[in-house]
Image (cartoon, protein in one colour):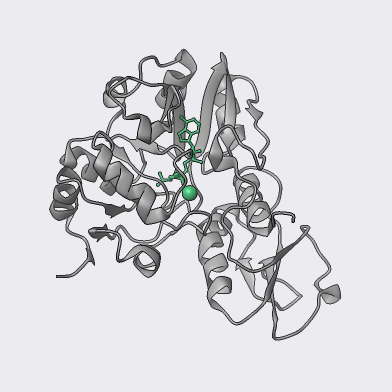
Length: 317
Ligand code: TXA
Ligand code: MG
């Protein structure tokens, strides 16, 4: 039977019966299971080869369900929801005991997201359960932005892949937490910090990544294509780059350099949409090194650069 398709009822029934679904969202595809079913959640960690210290995001169909998983919701979280609605934004909130420790890696908080993609919300609503889903890639590898990307890497581990087309945002959600009252951004993502600042009335602190993270999505070496990536600044003089069949050169936007580029016109929106597919293409190619130009350090460009720096980072020693 076909493993990948657009059968929403089938995907929902797989979730209800403890199976794994490749779930489309506007950010990246998720590897989804019933968040309240520990056996199903354990299968997510196995399928991804993901360490158990790295907690999962719980996806809901509607904000009204937030009280099913969160014990308390700060006023600022409510304000963000009121302003943005379903979006590429994840809220870290105090957790209710009903959420299995496996989902939150034993933390007393739970990460909650209501995806913007309507098909994702329909799937969750029709499954009738909160849905735990990390990005549907092997741990440490590039996140999937099409159903085929999921099939390429996790076909044997998922029971069904729901095809919702290519992801419109292309980078993961922004994660916000309220450790001491004020909002802190734990991961840059699809909702730019500037947008959060407009709603909050102040610029939230962005937590620096580290190789020994408290929130493990902050691992420095992540999104890795498995080969070296050399990052060059915006406006780089490409005439100085090495030319060889071993080296792939990817400019930020098309221009007089005549090279292949991530975007046609320099739009960060387009850059984010194409980012992970570009890294995958390099990973699958015969080229040994990728030279790639960073995005402008603003708006969605900051999330793009964050992913690129992690892709380029190689653990020392
Ligand atoms: O856009 C997204 O967020 C996608 C789609 C599928 O929704 N999901 C995603 O999941 O990117 P994942 O597992 O690849 O990244 C989730 C991040 C992890 O880095 C984890 O450390 C962090 O969320 N996280 C989860 N629960 C947390 C918690 N209670 N406190 C702090 N960080 C948490
Ligand atoms: Mg991930």
